Image (tube, rainbow, N blue to C red; front, side, top):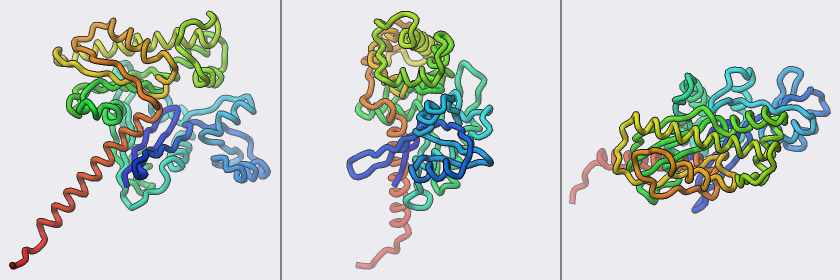
Length: 345
């Protein structure tokens, strides 16, 4: 049975099919360090808190990390930064390994097919995604999977545009990056990323208001709405300002990249916006208003959001993995039939 995996800066999410239902497993991609004691480790184990011990420290990992950070008045740490493994975090690989294994579990069969998301190289930064992609591939292979990277923007197309023959523009607003893919009948015409996302919004808001980043993140995730009626000078007001600034920046880069790629002008395509950063109410309308004002050389038939934007990439990775798995099974069956000896009448 195939699986899909969204390896995001903020969350790691797996998807697999269970009958007619798609089952998602999610963990926050963060950790917090606390002092080791026998009592502390015993209590964490009894409470099923995901953690790992290293030397004289215990690292609380995943969803519980934010709770512990709040209790101890400390900041969470991230294995990933700007969409890829953090080069500044010495514990990045063991932490993301622990979280990933918790989310995907063991393969149901040896060599189970698993597609995992990987961002495109950003056009506004000299970051390379190759090391990140190959490290995840090795990590997942060691668990027993047959891993295959899928571009994050293309995963959105697979997830949300089956009803349009996988043709359209998919935009995934993640925490570390924003990934964009223009596809025509499941063939990517253009794909790239931008090295800004939800983390950039949080960091700018924290700096502008003097609020800790984790508290800004919590405010954003707690019923924040892009209505621009919030008080000036508060966290929500600053969030709205930087959200709008991010949208303008992303759309300007889409227009520039479309022009450089010389995309067909007679295209009429839907646009899907998804990703955890697109979750606030009012995001879709704000994005559509700014997109329609932009100078883009093809027509936008509609702009749509999705019911659960956090799960789109994992769902799209699963669609690709299942399609690949079925194709391999079909090839295997065809090969078996081709070598089967003929029988006499």
